[in-house]
Amino acid sequence: SAAEAEAAGAKVVRPEKHGVSAARNFGAKNATGDYLLFTDADVFFGRGAVPALMECFRSPEVGAAVGLFAKMPADRNFASVYKNAWMRFTYKSLPDRIALFFTSVAVIKKEVFDKSGGFDENYASPSVEDTELGRRLADSGVNIQLCRTAEVVHCRKYSIAGLLATDFKRASALTRLFLREKFSGSKRKNSGVEKKFSAP
Image (cartoon, rainbow, N blue to C red; front, side, top):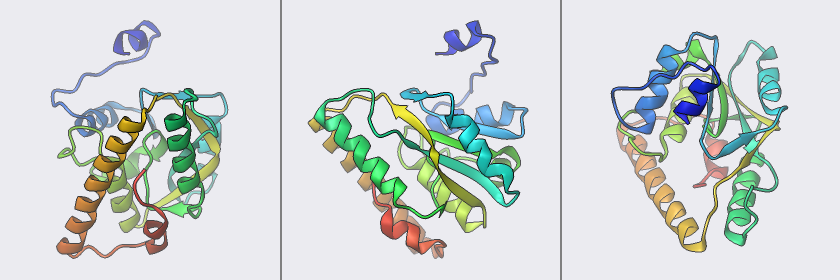
């Protein structure tokens, strides 16, 4: 991916620390624009996704915006279609203002990201680092908007065994996050969000 990006004329930076959170934070630190766009290697953006996300920032109160997976994933086997449908339904049923930062398709003002301290670098592999950041942003009063018109295609292929393993790992990580918040005395905002949101 790095070689492809460089060949296309993009500036590629390589973090000294390893791990998904450290890489994202390093990229954000080196970015020079007013907005940061986050996505994953298994996500395909159509032409309209970024303009739809940026439309949310017409309101100066909005600090970040996240989109959705499209109705169908790239792979049409049962496990992949089920997982995609579950995530789309779960996210789409949330209110317009959420306590979630979905890094498959998300834009945030750079000043807001920098002020937040970025992703928790204790998360070295993809886990709930985006959920943790979203909850922290919401706690600090950042308005994160769910942009239902910004759709991207998920290109990950799931098997039944892989789906169960992914959901178990995610649920375990979320449970640890919720317990850590509870015992640290953190008071949640947007409580309606966490009632609807479980473990994608």
